[in-house]
Length: 122
Image (cartoon, rainbow, N blue to C red):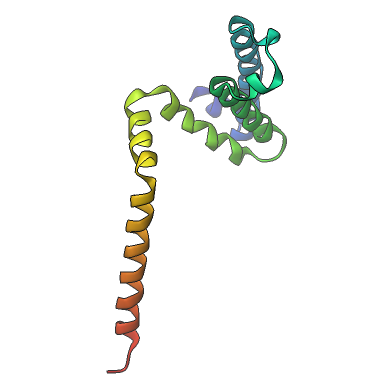
């Protein structure tokens, strides 16, 4: 990125983070205005997944600016939200979450048993 070559990485993150906060705020207000959110109750607003997603995105932008730039890395999950193929992968994993967790538990048990056999003085 040419901006990083001109100034250091910290100032570049601050500039891009500030631009993201401003643009995300405008985007969130436009979504709320177009969806008729200003006439809805707070409960209806909190159950709208698109608005909640953009509010969380805005919060992580603020955290990246105010606390630590590590929080900007969470914003990379926006790629998953925008790409339909990656979203389908996440859906398929979370739909079968119980079987995946049980498979991980079985793997943990097997690793534990092999480690016990490996450390045993036979």
